[in-house]
Image 1 (spheres, helix red, strand yellow):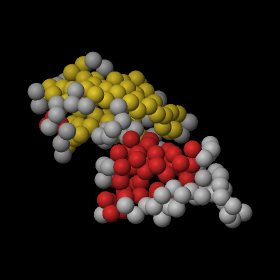
Image 2 (cartoon, rainbow, N blue to C red):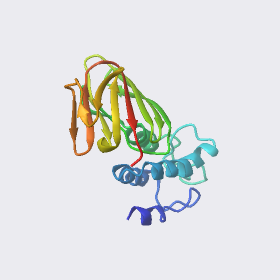
Image 3 (spheres, rainbow, N blue to C red):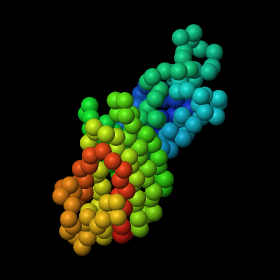
Length: 204
């Protein structure tokens, strides 16, 4: 279904899905883990707006053409690229008034840096990815907030280190009660503070 959908989007000049509907396209791809397809759509469709001089997200893909007087060059529903890149590429999202989650999802991106607003505070997130070798997550979690880091591929992970201390090795949790494993995923619960999480991963 996703493959068929990708072939039906049209072009930035003659879109078959407008900016409001593109949110649903990106959400579906994100939920399926097709991050690279979502990035390609953002590059193709929303990149075309930037090529035409956009400095904000527009109401529709052809708002710069002589059209309706109500066409807007700054519209809230046009923000799906920013939301997709934060939620799925960076993997950071707010899950409650004082809670957050950072989830790694594989993509073509090798470096990702972002800030997630949390009430009056900010969660800082940075990924450095070396495929089949090393994943490094650096984050600064604000005071008064708690969250979870979720990493996939437990069976392909040789070692996990939190701030230099080994917390997973040889298929077992090592001296870190905040780490648990569920459905081939690591789930690490954290409070406020600065953290560096390193994962040594082998190719499947």
